[in-house]
Image (cartoon, rainbow over all chains, first blue to last red; front, side):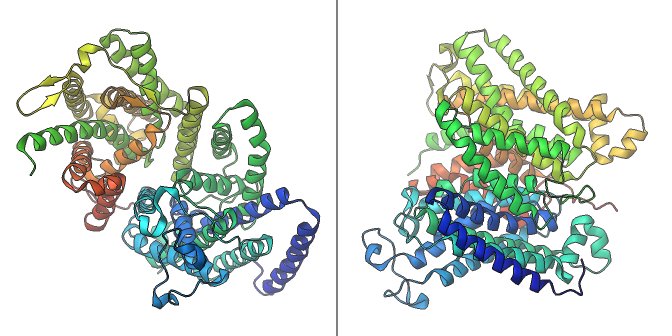
Length: 329
Length: 299
């Protein structure tokens, strides 16, 4: 951590290179490959934000799919085209959100979705993060069940299990990688600050950190809510990419997939989440023809789980992690 | 508007579900007490046990007594395999590593079942002597219901005495109190932990059998929510307390059934949500659970 060199400059240079790369990819590659690249980007945002909680702060949240669902539904409700609202039985916006005549543009809707997710993270975090141990894992998993239950039952807002389709297709490769850059920058900036050092201290030894004057709840909440914000954004990107969302998409398997990406890539590293998301998505699209050809449904998940076990047993620091690095614990 | 018979009937359903949660919670609380591990793979044992009995009981038609012993043995073996293959290697490392690995094992087993058996649910048929319907004035039930309640209570009582009185049970409690000291005192830590996994998994597989016999339908993903709810029962009752785990199981089972039975039908969809709402309430009001002691922090 060389703090005297302005790393922002590197991020700007990196951003320009990324932009040029994305521009080039957009021109050269076919739509299928661009589709895969966008998915890699969305999962990178989700994984990098999970890294803040699970990698750096050493909390083990299993509720990422819930925050993605909240972000996806909130942003969709804000951007949904006016002309279709009636036929889809979706409510018009109340006057506080711009009145019944408005549909929000993409960026503010994404941010609003992220904020909703962060807010719910605060609500769930205050009771749960006071406690030690693995309560957060179970409580966040429970939160995911509660969120999907509501997504199924609040038919007036979410259309129940049918889900919402015909979402405007706003997400493109530029938006996606813009958010990848923002997420990586924010996570990196937090980790290399006073807050980040407090988070790492909590991860390594909560009691020792407390003795040294770190108030754990504050930093845990900060990392949990920031992680949830970007998960919400990733959910919004996902909704405006696939153009249709249903409650069952935001299931345990989505969380599991993001956890696998994080662990495989290397929890608690800057490049790990990206490497994990890219390689796992690539693996999925390589295996998909095999699964369909031989009708081995479940093969992809089976291989994910196998990979997770192998990594945990023999290379727990992940592919980008260094030997000395500990995964949150 | 609700008759006494209806109330009694639903209470019985709740007690039966509670029995199964309590059985699962026993294995979970012992493992959590020793290793601080939320054993997600425990849920997979339910599925494995259910499908194992489906093949030897519904298909092969072995006698009930043989089935009980075989499924217990099968579950125990699976528990031993999981412990030896994975958990033993990770002991002493970060606690989260165990959690992630158990999550991996759960998903691995679930999808293996999905691949080799079927993504469709199976109908679990029980022989006539377990499923003839008996009607009394207030209650309608099948012999399997009585079997579930009696066998669960027997298992719980023997488990309680096992933990309190036997040498192995005392060793387990000693390890959950302090692993290093127990090791110094000459307790064979690895063997005792394996035993905890074997017993917990055997009970979980047996519960899978009960589940299939009671609800008549088994599927590759039946174990996940059930397993997680069993851990919720552990938290509600008090982490590390065996009577607490049983109590938590019964509270959860009754709450789940009675809330569907007496709230307007509209709420039936919230069934799973209610269980986790209870969890969050307990964590807010009394995080150590009903019978648990406050977890002390050792430096």
